[in-house]
Amino acid sequence: MIDRAHDLPIAKQAEALNISRGSVYYLPRPVSEADLAIMRGLDRLHLEYPFAGSRMLRGLLAAEGCKVGRRHVKTLMRRMGIEALYRRPRTTQPEPGHKIYPYLLRGIEIRRPNQVWAMDITYIPMARGFVYLAVVLDWFSRRVLSWRVSITMEAAFCVDALEDALARHGKPDIFNTDQGSQFTGAAFTGALIKNAIAISMDGKGAWRDNVFVERLWRSVKCEEVYLRAYDTVSEARVSLGRYFDFYNSRRPHASLDGMTPDQAYSTPLPLRLAA
Image 1 (cartoon, rainbow, N blue to C red):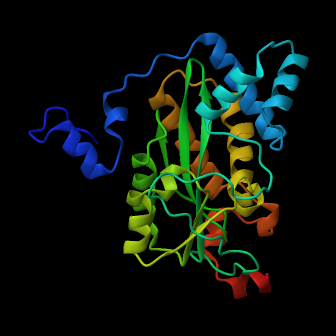
Image 2: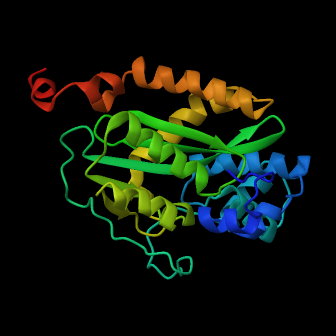
Image 3: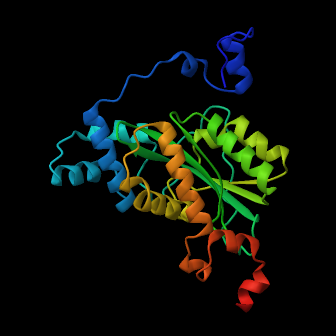
């Protein structure tokens, strides 16, 4: 989104996009092969034991023959954007100037498509490196409405996925995310406020508040990502695109009475109940 050849200075472009100027100039160091191997192991273990923190994950890695310090595990978890998932008091301070919105879905019955959408980001390992995947999901039908892949966790690719979903599918009554800075920033919340969408955010570390997205990550990784080793970002995009086409249009869900997400998204509730 930053055009280095543009007449507008890079600092002004970054300010207009509400992103850190330092992130524009910063050139990340490549991740070592050893760290990439540890990160792949952490991703697999985190999916299987989402309650495990850095201490337990270090022990699980050690049991598999991978000796690594807890501090290094914490550093890699932070880079991957994962943490132990359990409910705890909201003691973490939000980004300066970022508002944290309340969780709006407790006790609400989801009865139709476009009533509630949710969004999250996950780490996707490749043969050499990794990317991040962001998905917009319809809670009622479990349908993937939009998705994007990025090499960084900046807010721009999340905003892009959101705007794509809104352009192609209308808008929900409520949009739910976690408290990540990508979702609390003005660029993301501003797009929701502009469209008069109620904003809901999970409790800190409360994976059950966004459980359907967590289930999607398990499906994506076990049925697609872990069976392959993407060589390039473009290959990851193409392969993930094929999987999401399959997931939406052909993969039946027991929780949807055997229907696919596409069928549930387009089938009114009275017809589903009659069936």
